[in-house]
Image 1 (cartoon, rainbow, N blue to C red):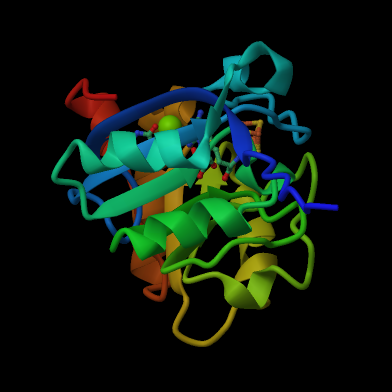
Image 2: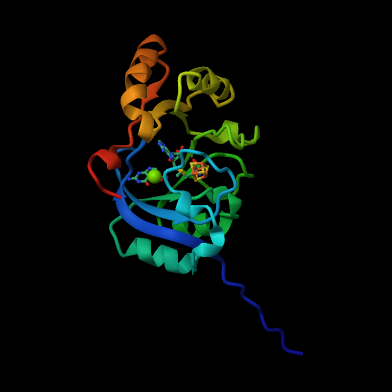
Length: 207
Ligand SMILES: C[S@@+](CC[C@H](N)C(=O)[O-])C[C@H]1O[C@@H](n2cnc3c(N)ncnc32)[C@H](O)[C@@H]1O
Ligand SMILES: Nc1nc2[nH]cc(C(=O)O)c2c(=O)[nH]1
Ligand code: SF4
Ligand SMILES: [Mg+2]
């Protein structure tokens, strides 16, 4: 009997995708194509994209569609974010993007197992669902959100778990930025291994 290959299209729930500049962390200021996947089980009280949490509310797109949309722009770097992108297996998505010559970056809380092939991993740990210990050494960048004073000591706990050479950033929670940014500046002056990350896109009103 003739064998027929069954190809299951790899598709993922996509809340939005847009070409903008990376507003945060090490790659701040660089052109970046963002793909925001639906679904998050972390539940940060101050999350700035709560509409992403329910995966079912977001239509699925195939990885080929996603790649082709990126390739309609001059983008060199793609940022996979969410939601919590590691709720999905990202092996095929990152493979098809890297085959197209694109850099693959991820924004993650590290609270689900690592999948995908990454040029840059930004890990932003959360109290609401802690990062998995096995994800920590893979981070290229640790981005701790400062919502109150106790978050400095809390962040040091994770700084001790990342690899040597991992960049360390403190980023004010947006609604507390006026109050926390001066404290962050003083903390960085006293602890110069840390650097400041601001959500640049929110100051210049781009996505
Ligand atoms: C919306 S999250 C999506 C990716 C992943 N779930 C995570 O939390 O890393 C993208 C980035 O925005 C940060 N973020 C979310 N809400 C924020 C807020 N209100 N103020 C500052 N940073 C925020 C997160 O810590 C994370 O670094
Ligand atoms: N411009 C811009 N930069 C970002 N860096 C991380 C973002 C995210 O939501 O993951 C983000 C975002 O939403 N917009
Ligand atoms: S882990 Fe990320 S997407 Fe999920 S609630 Fe926290 S900030 Fe929002
Ligand atoms: Mg954002």
